[in-house]
Image (tube, rainbow over all chains, first blue to last red; front, side, top):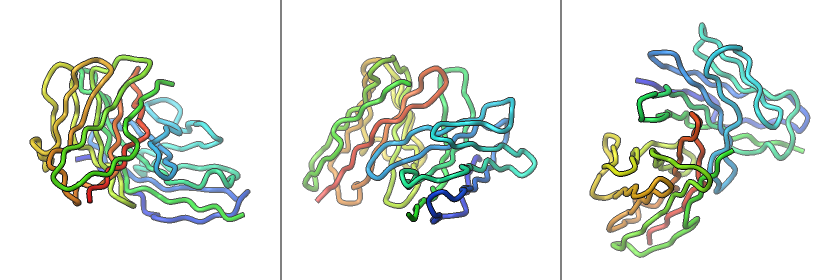
Amino acid sequence: AQSVTQPDIHITVSEGASLELRCNYSYGATPYLFWYVQSPGQGLQLLLKYFSGDTLVQGIKGFEAEFKRSQSSFNLRKPSVHWSDAAEYFCAVGGLILTGGGNKLTFGTGTQLKVEL
Amino acid sequence: GAVVSQHPSWVICKSGTSVKIECRSLDFQATTMFWYRQFPKQSLMLMATSNEGSKATYEQGVEKDKFLINHASLTLSTLTVTSAHPEDSSFYICSARETGELFFGEGSRLTVL
């Protein structure tokens, strides 16, 4: 069974500081990995995804993530956090089902990011 | 990117009534849509996969008769919470796949009094 662990429930950083959100996954085949951001009362917005190729992926809003197969990790990073980055971040893993089922994603429990001014 | 829209964003209803939530793909056709439920401070849990023109596939533990899903067209899936009770209060989010990527709706907050 696939699973995702986000060990940090809450993280607080100062504006301008660097950020790393941790994500570990368990998946029986080649994983497809995603990071989503959710603002209060809103749906999810895709930050970035990893399917294959370069293990360092760039996303929107200055975020990046690195896939490390040996550590089963897909940590999200940002060099300099902005106050508007305060939100909840979800890591997800899934497999691309080619024959009609679509992506079935398993989400982590999320990390709530607070940014201090 | 593709746009998925949900309606209503907020709904408050009395216990025992039924509530319908719509999920629309605005600029693409979606043969498959997904319904998630999110409890406060928790992650999204997949409830069911909605398939256009056929029955939905429910995840283990999700009551089919409680959460009715209809995917009557390529741009619309509906989730009906039947005989709603306070424990059904939650944030419901739908998603649809377009060119291999999932796009999520804004979510619908259901409060059952």
